[in-house]
Image (cartoon, rainbow, N blue to C red; front, side, top):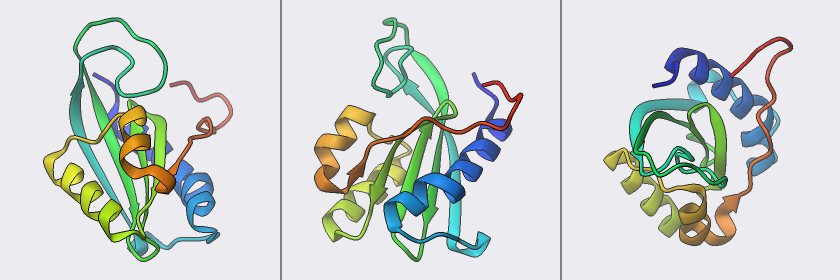
Length: 134
């Protein structure tokens, strides 16, 4: 498995500086306005829910969800890589999202795009600090 603390730190920074502002249009979030969830999730391939092909080997990686509670937006990371963002202002999208979060089974990037439609936000590559490796 991966390194959850390191991945959480990188995801939290990316969500604060890049992904959540891109979804909401809001520049800054306080720590009280953001919640982080980290849990293991098993995928049928080594692509672990991302959009690239992978070997057909069951793989367990950490899923990280950074949730902006006031602005209703979330950034989802699989194995430290940004999978997608979701604007949660639509009640139906919010309900589907919270059900997946409670079940600790976040949809893959492809499934999320189908499930969340216009609320889905395509990822940009995660910016890593100079010298940092995955």
